[in-house]
Structures are given as structure tokens and as C-alpha cells.
Length: 387
Image 1 (cartoon, rainbow, N blue to C red):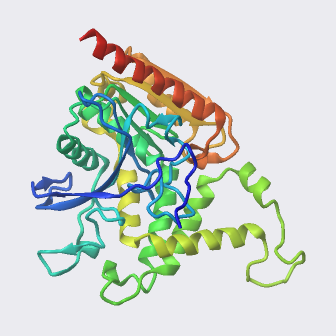
Image 2: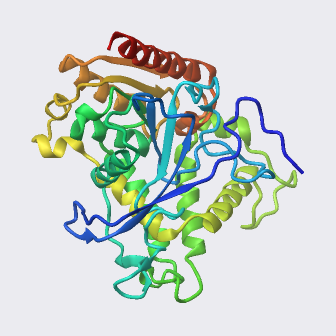
């Protein structure tokens, strides 16, 4: 039975893998001799390779950002609301590349991969990777695809941090940067939330020091708790109020510790689903990458100094009810860019969904992204005709 996809969908997509045999020296000074990267592409690369956009994923993201893997898939890629023909990231105009970062658990080499040196899964032996390492790996992917300069590099949350790092480390290799619901570095409160999530995994008796694969188990309770903590911080108080209020599942108090409120039921369900689909070691690694991120660190802790290297145009977007990455954090980036005379547009979008807003097709947000990228597409065309 053939399935008809929505007209603005990229339709069926096939993930691709890149085997890299060039050793990679990581920030932690360990070396990976070889690794695999999973990625997907949507749209067509033009003749001079000037219409490419790179999508950087957030903590639990991966390469499957748009379209469907099978004809009977009910669920599209994680950013399908923004990527596709005539959508904000328009695949009629752009060639879009999305990857699963190193250390991930969706096909790219990570803790749940086989370690040729030991003959078993990496587990806790997999090195910690940083945002800077990811950008270095993304540059290698760009080289493999023959893309000397991205029309745009785009990301939300931890993805936005990668975009910021791109603009500092490889300024000549992107024409525009779109940083959504992000921050120049984590606040102490954010690091604290990550630590609670990590401790819930590390203290789970099924964690086995990170080598749970051989035990044919995994730290399910720890992962569920980690996801519950994370999920609470991604939603706003308003969003939770609208979605659940204080509604009781059975309509009355049961005077016990089982699920009584709808919000409890929702959190447990989210945690349960997540624990089945995400690797605990990868979760630990990704939260550490978040904690370590600070591009100003190499520039005497001066963000302006770091961003003085950037040459691209910037679009920075925050959301009013996002308290995990509050608008003030985006404004720190914007103010540093303005102080350096950079080309930057900024919008704080009024939305009730909290940090998760960047995943939703909120009209003002989507239209802003679309018009910014349309201008980039026109400039790409203009540059072509001028040459």
C-alpha cells in the first residue's frame, strides 16, 4: 500500500553513513582513529554548491530531521514542521543536511558502538566530546560533501551552541548563522539540572559503571527520571497549566503514591518512551557537552573578543516563556555581536510553549525564519548572476 505524504513533505528519505578513517583528536586529548557519521539530505545541491544548509541537533536529536523513513511511518522527522518544500527551510531552494553527532545513539559512533580496540561496546570508555569537537566533525562532513561554505548553519538549544561555535572557529565557511533558544554558555542553574539528570542515571543499579550492554540491561529508572527532570524544564508553567492544570486521572484523590495527576501520568509516559529510544551513556555525554560549552573561554572569557572573528549574518531568536534558555541569554549573544559591529537580527517570540517552542510551527517564528532564509537564497542567486 503506497502512502501519500503531505504536499509540503520531503517524503521518503534514506539515511546515509560516512565512514571516516582520518584520526580525530578531541578536546579531551583522546584520539578516535575512525568513526561513522549518520546523516540525511533533503533537496538538491546546486551546481556551485552555494545553497547548502546545515542543521545542528539539540540534546536528544539526531539526523532524521524531516520526512519519513517508511511509507507507514506515522511520525515525521523531529523538525519536519520547518523543513520541506515551501516551508521555512525550503527544500525547493536549499540542499539541507542533518546529522547525528559523534557520541550519539542513532547510528553515529558513540558509547553504544563497538570498540575495535577492546572487542566490546565502548560504554563508559567512549571519550567525552565537546561542541568544538562536533563542529570539527561537521567540517569534515562538509568537505566530504564538497561544501566549501554553508548558506546557513541553523540550530536550536544545544544546536544553537554549535552554530555559535561555527561562527567563531570557521568564520569563512558559513554565510549566515541562525541561533534559536540558545545561550553563550550554561548558567549554574542549568548545570545543576544536568547534574540531577546525570546522578539519576549514575546511581541506577542497572548502570553498571556504563557497561550495562553486556549485562543485557540498561538504567531504565535513571533515564526515566533524567527525562522527567529535563522535560519539566523544557515546558513553561503556562504550557503545563494549559495542558494539564491540576486535573486528576480518576477525578478524585486516591491518597497514595501512584499516578493521580494528569501531569504525573504525562511525565512518566514521556520518560518511559524516552528510556526505550535513547542510550543512557549518550545522555550523560550530551549533557556534559552542554556544560562545557563556552566559546569565550579561549578568548580570555570575553564573548565579544570571541565573536569578533565572525563574518556571517546572524539571526538570533528567543521565546518569552523559555526559562531554561531565557531571552536574556540570547540577548547576551546579540549585545556582543552588536558591540563588534556584526550584522545581526534578533526577535523574542511570544509563545507559551517554553524552551520546546523552537520545535513548534509558531507562525511568527516560522515566518521570520522563512523571510531571513529567502533573503539568503536571493543573495545566493544574485551572487551567481553577478559572477
